[in-house]
Picture (cartoon, rainbow, N blue to C red):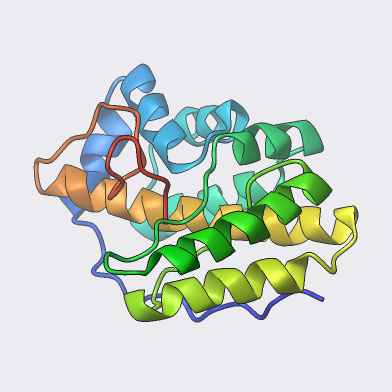
Length: 189
């Protein structure tokens, strides 16, 4: 049984300047940025090759469509680039142990890290949501879980893309290969 979807987080839309930058940047730069959003070369190449986008909504719709169209091998590649969500600061050690144990069971069954989009969730609710999600999704068969994981990746990619565009509009850039909002060496949210 899959966990219900969380409501989408209300976001400040990226500026038109950010979209212009995305549309006119060199393909390799755009591809690099896209790969920080979702570790799928096919997804990144598709979005980069369909530029220019008339508006952010069109780009996000193209992101969703490209994510829905990922073949099983592309999905496996994207999942291989993911790690567990970061727990909020101040979470006690037993929580880390519980999450590590639950993730180990998940990885043993499905062969990849557990992915979940926590956008719009209060930081103090993240641990409970992750643990409940892992426990719930361990009951899925591999095909059911592939569908759920693909949906979570799509949501993660969309949120990361919005963050990347917002950063571009502020003149901020990240060329260290980490997902927007992610410190190098720490897992994505």
